[in-house]
Image 1 (tube, rainbow, N blue to C red):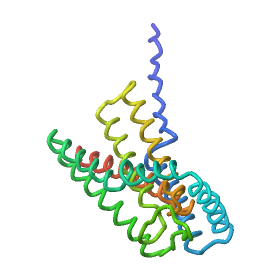
Image 2: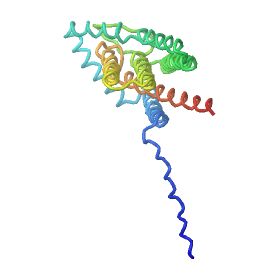
Image 3: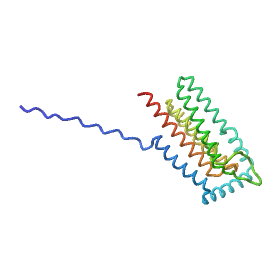
Image 4: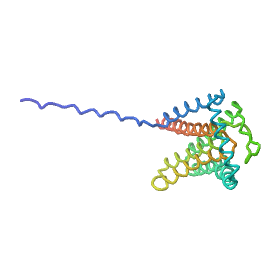
Length: 230
């Protein structure tokens, strides 16, 4: 009698890692941010030329359209102001704390502090002057790069999206949250340019750095949570 052949089970192929991960996103945005910071610090001619020409064009429009300029001031000073974003962060921290997610609440506080410290540190280190106009439509203080409004909104609202997704938000509510985030992040940057208080590269820097910090936060928190679960 012949024994039937024994077939070894087919090995399961290893699960492929997603192409886009928070860690890879953080690395790409960090590299882009570093390049932009270097160009701004070195006062690279083509970048400065673009900044000046685009700022001059927008300022002429802002002077010619006082109604639209007033609307931009309301949006930038109240709706998308960094203090509005900090209040939203405080609300999120309180909600997480009351829900028992105290480590996550503490992590959000640390992340917000780090984002603010990085923003202010870069402003002080680079010391870039803001645009100046003989007929300004708005004013702002301290150094120009990066845009604090753009960076704070990107970090805060990006973090909110992650928290909502983590809580299982989906469907129309998720779509609305994404739409509000995109409109707000893009919108706050445009208001700063329209009002003539930032250069284009300031706003781009705020977007890149804010996005980088969100991705870095998600990566770091995920790894810490994984290590605690072992």
